[in-house]
Image (tube, rainbow, N blue to C red):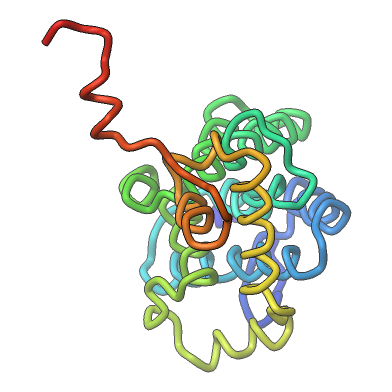
Length: 215
């Protein structure tokens, strides 16, 4: 952690710096309890993956990116862009206001914007990849085996899930129903197709076939 002060959270050594403390305070204010616990678990999982695999990374960027990745995931969401992009913009502004330079602020933006796109996020910078991995572990169990089960249990015990599957599904369905145009090219599309009556995403096949060119 580049010599920064640290503290222990749920058995995990994490950076204890001004920007991390400020981010945690902001997250507590912005999130419902189940989502706050989710983003903290995601952060701790990302940190442990880095520690266990000896991945060099900017610990503050990973903290801010994971802790703010769902800042627009709520039933107030009203677009106009996909929720990850709206959240990424908010996270970048927050980071800049906290004195984070442009390069690091852009890494935070990428971490939030790509948090649900592992086919891209896992192949970007270490910070983005770690955020993606930690979030994916908490949401779908991605790479669950990378962290000892007793460590996962301790983190979940300290930051319980609080019916996350049901409550997160409700948020995704809200977005698919109220702002379907923001979901056609991301995973929320699956929730719209499964749960929302009348939801119909355009097909890429039709978009290519109907492009305004002769051939």
